[in-house]
Image (cartoon, rainbow, N blue to C red):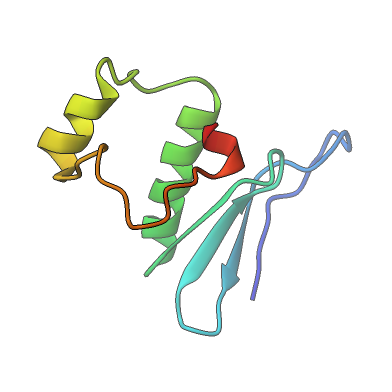
Length: 92
């Protein structure tokens, strides 16, 4: 089941579409940008979508020292690799 708001101006999609997925989760998709996020409920999916839209529009704070953030906040050593020493193309 999906629902979306109407576009009274007729100048393009506007609003959010909700889709019930087969696994029981809900996906919220912004009709203007096409960005989508999911959650266990409509409220959770909408909250996740709001965060993605804020970041898409340039919100959020830059990470000053990514290596330090990885080590201290996520417990990941950016110098350790999992055997495959080749970097993906987007990281070269």
